[in-house]
Amino acid sequence: MTEFKNEGIAAEHVTIVVRLMGQGDALVATRSLRALGRHIDEAAVVEYLRSDDDVLVIAFINEIPAGFARGHCLRRLDGVRPKFMLYEIETALPFRRRGVARALMENMLDVARSLHSLNLFVLTDEANAAAMALYHSTGGRRPRPDDVLFEFELH
Image 1: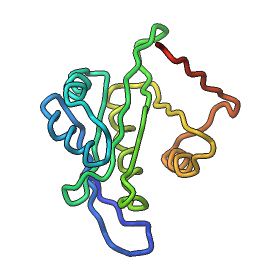
Image 2: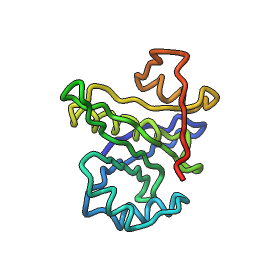
Image 3: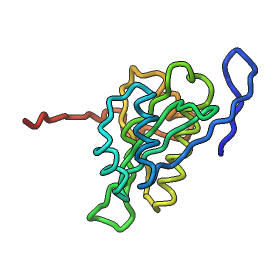
């Protein structure tokens, strides 16, 4: 359990519980992600949680889903230590500015360390100020300012 003080206007103290989802958590994960407004296929969640290389963590405040993050352990051919890609991180609107994203990010960093990953990387848009601030404040650095992402549609 990770505890953070609310950084918003109110001085309320909230307890954020971040749970790493495992194979037996498909129902909890499905219900939680649906409560967060995601369109989720339960069979896909079961398959996702079956993989040792796919990671899903969900944050709860007072047992209510407040956010989630997911990522992937990427095996390499040039070394035995994997890299960890944070694929997405999201906090539900009512829970923003309460430390949820920071708790999720710190948990994913811990997971990546436990997998002996060489590093954790994440892609974002420079215009996404909240994401940029989160990644900077949790120790992320931008090694090359001119990185570009190409996406290919597969039909």
